[in-house]
Length: 248
Image 1 (cartoon, rainbow, N blue to C red):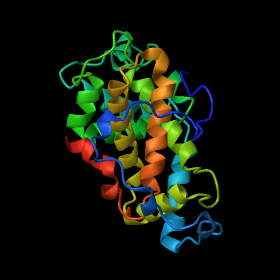
Image 2 (cartoon, one colour):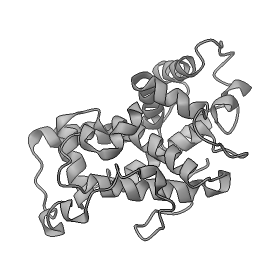
Image 3 (spheres, rainbow, N blue to C red):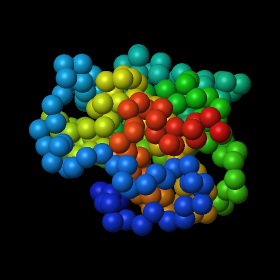
């Protein structure tokens, strides 16, 4: 599977920032408190419950023999290409969506069923944004574009790493803030995924990137998300500055 070449680190360069347009930066003094406040960050019963539900989703592998997983994959196709009938779960048609081969299940092995859930949520909840990115309708595109579906799996993987979701409790500001957001909206991870995808595509255009620069673009996206999740005035997913990208 096409996946991140290495863990992302904060010292990575972000690249051109024209696409932020002043909207996505806030002064550094607005970052939340001291790091020491995160150590031993207490979770409320609701936060513990929602975090555990999210972790449970992370542990579900994609199983091409399960009818519900097959149905989710078909639903993703129908949401993406409503006027085109799918010939089969294994079909060369999947390459039109940016899968590496005729069988998408091989790509899901790197991140599990949640990466399919993320894509399907994006398609159903923000269809205009989803289709704009899927069909590369915005901006001057590269001759060698990133594959949409596999990029989506990489974004799921990046968010899981960035939020350190396999830890018992958050270990940093962005993790603590995300748990707070999750307590306000159980779909926060899925919405954050949609925001990240839109941010990544905008960064791709700003950097005039091509296929081999995908990891660099994803690094830039992660750094900006970390900054936004560390702002003191972020209490809901809608408070993230980049949330507005979904409705542009």
